[in-house]
Length: 592
Image (cartoon, rainbow, N blue to C red; front, side, top):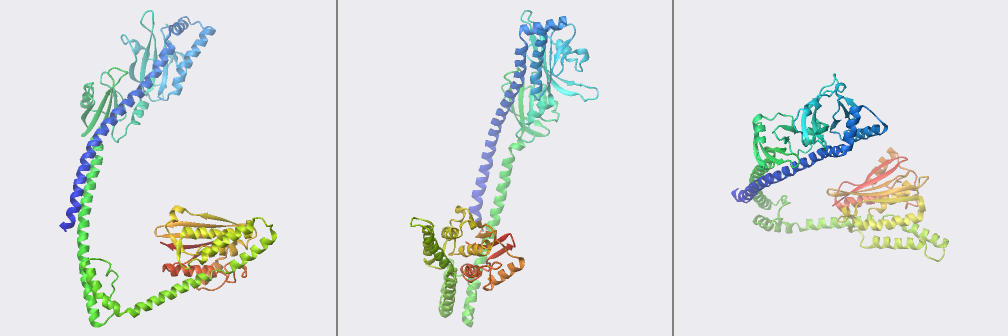
């Protein structure tokens, strides 16, 4: 047992251990790189959000536009040009508000005594009549507003509606003369949208993606769970140069990655990945290693048992041979004797040689039986519709009389017929490649198509690569096609079709010949099946043309059925399915 287990277990344990260690190291390194790329991508996408505000500030922050807007709101005097300016500015704020799904609304106020401002979707409004009115006072309360300011707040547009969480971004509009703020662009962004947007970047279960402001407060995050104060304090106290770190959260260790924003001073992009997710592959490898070791142990145990059982079986067989020789009884079953080259096989060969020689006459009798079977196979094959040759020759004669001396259909028929005769008479009875059988059957089909014109169409359905390596009994397809033509297609009023379908399965090939001819009733199908199995000579179709079919009815089917059984030693023969008025299917299996 140790002899078999040691070579199996040692390489498995060593390979499994190395795989676990190397995979864990590579996984941690790849995760750190992926997280760094992830926070870089979040940073770039956030920059796109703020670029919309910068673009809006550039479009509306020119002195000419600001002073004209201030003059309009201060004097309440509207001319045609002023009306056009207000329309242009409204379009400027309506376009991004309608196009960007994360923008809730945009406000643009300038200094005026009436507290009027432009609002997306509404136009010119006043604070006392607008549902969202406290934002401007809070902005004005800020000292020296510079750059883009951010505020998280709630907006309740209607009394019956729940408040909406938004993040308001303020872009001051500065006067070039005084240097002070003459107005502001306020963009309200759906906070939930940005949280869901962050969730789309998460690549692992339980991953936290967090954006912190310059004060360490959480601006956006993809998880709804509340971060403990200790964790948030640790994140906000990280050095700007820190890229990777570990943190405890909910009794779980997380591998963290930090990136400082390049556009907003003090902003941090943080990714937290559960280390359990990183170690999951290593854990699965550990499990697989244990399973393989257990399987190797069981395999060694089973191999030891089988070898011991094999030795005992050989010993029992030798004892049985000795006892049979002593009593003059027939030789016991020795199906596996002589196959091996070990000492047991040599002993059994030596012991059984004299017994086999003494029963040589029995072997000769079996050989004669085999030769008779082969002779029957050749005789059956030679019976396959010789009338076909005579009918073809007669057709050729009439064609030659009707055509001129130049090349015509007669030449084609002669070429196909010569190829078919060569194939038929070349070493009859042997097994041939399946592709060769198909190629020569196509000669037969071509002759019949010339003979019958447009009466029928033939379709082949097979994959040459699938059936290339396999063989079959010669002339197995031609009788099936002939029966479909003479007793299915020929008897119908219009034109018909025949489909030859070859499909590979595990261990055998299915050949089906399908026609859409006159078909047969259920009672007739039963009679044909019984007559094919009993080698009775009845018609395959309803009436048929016995003279044209060689006077043999379905003898082609019976012969094919018999040859398949003799060649492959199988009880399965032809399968015949038919429905009157729809057609007939003849199917057979060719073992490998």
